Amino acid sequence: MAEYKETHGTKIQNYTTDPDNPLIGQVWFNDTDDALKFQYQGVYSAWSTGGNLNTGRYGGAGAGIQTAAFITGGDKPSAPSTTNLTELYNGTNWTEVNVINTARRYFPGVGTTTAGLVFGGTPPTTGATESYNGTNWTEVNDLNTARTGLAGAGIQTSALAFGGSAPGAPNQNETELWNGTNWTEVNNLNTARVNLAGAGASNTAALGFGGSVSGTKSALTELWNGTNWTEVSDLGTARYQLGDAGTSTAALGFGGAPTPSTGDKTETWNGTSWSETGDLSTKRAILTGAGTTTSALAFGGEPSPTATEEFSTNTPIANTWQTSGALGTARYQLSSATNAPQNAALGFGGTDGSSYFTVTESYNGTNWTEVNDLNAAKAFAGGAGIQTAALIFGGYGPGISNTNQTELWNGSNWTEVNNLNDARQQIAGCGTQTAALAFGGEPNPTKTEKFNGTNWTEMSGTLNTGRAFIGSAGENDSALAIGGGQPAVAITELWNGTSWTEVNDLNTAGFSIAGAGSATAALAFPSPRRPLTETWNGTNWTETGDLNVGRNALGGAGSNSAALAFGGYNGTSPVTSTEEFTNTANVVKTISTT
Image 1 (cartoon, rainbow, N blue to C red):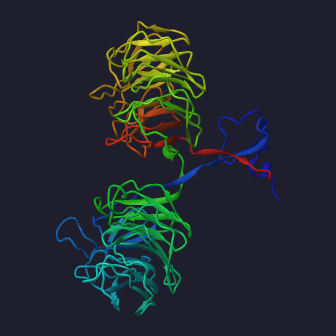
Image 2 (spheres, rainbow, N blue to C red):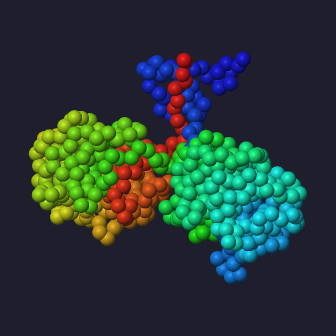
Image 3 (cartoon, one colour):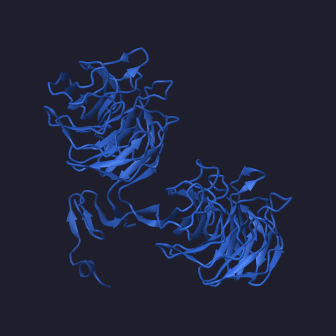
């Protein structure tokens, strides 16, 4: 057997700590941890943009794989609405090919781009079945029960049709089996429904999920074994008119109505249960799907009838936000220990619009835990420090109006210490517990103060543009003031320990922005109630991966390569959402010796 040196050209080296920039595949021994470790490229599940359909539509039939799929029929947004147009996807672009014989919508497709089958649909409600050979569509024997809004599974010679709606019977449970020549009625679904989804590789093993039952969205899932349907674990999110891909043991369900609440949700089926995975980028319903649970395609739909997205479980983790454990208390305009790392954060204070909070929560990289409260409830305050040594200053709360109060956190309790010189709210802060910086805010929007662990000192250097709701990053001798104001501005200013200098602007103006990192390598997120994120390299801002939940007035911590976003306001209500950002695709893993 080949040795590591023979395949990689080097011996396994010992390090006191992990090497700074290990190569993908590199193996080393960490003496401090007494562990053998290696570097690999981390991946996650996500949708990415594909080539647009030539003819936008919803309610079309489709099938195939991610790099070779078809869509036919459906409704166009323009008149005449119902179409017979067919397009083929090659993994990059859609190309128009020969049309189906019967124009229709709300019908399923199965098979491949060289051996496809479609059946049912409307208007009028039909049982018409057509077979595709890669060039032409040919009419074959009809379904026994004409219907629309049904689901399908299988291939051209071994298919299953189930559920749907027929004239006088808005919810169908009929199931029919196709043997390549004829349809035969077999045992029914347990629950009659319409606009459901289906997955399966043949007429002997299929999955039916979601749909509408007497006008109510459903999460029901049923498994077909070739003879009978059996109810199994429900979808996590009830919905209808969703897209589908995969088989009876490995399926994917995505999008669906009612939008926007369910229009981007994606769930994966492992043969036993459903679990949430990466959301669609474009919320939509009445869309079409193809592919597998690891490599799927979503195309068409309403309200984005030309959009195509490609799903992969092998997307490198780079410049992305991923959802983590939620805060215990939904709130916005909360403060944070700005210098804390991503996996050891602290959030404190805030408001839900009616109440002000003393709540303090500690984050361990997975979950938040409530710890001892602030002495005074407040929001719109500045924060600094780390999880075990934090600072909160200024703000606004019941009975204290604009305050100059300062409290110090020792890892267990908050203690009141010497106050700011100027009482203000909507104030920004950064640095450590013993070397903090406070700037901006109302009613003194240009003021800057430094804290030395005991006292605050007003600095002669003031912001060039006085404003509140500023984002921050850095230390008390090297910091960034990012955006802010009402109306929002894109202004960025750099602090050198003595004075502020205007530098290059954000690409998108924003206020109540959260920041992370240093004066030379920062992250700003997001613009007002939008998911935009920008990264700073010491000279310019560049847009990077968006947050999953658009919001502002949130808490932030970490660095520009490993940041944390938590809480905030989404335009309707305070949220508990927590997301972790990473801009590195590489992950260190410990090799178990047990």
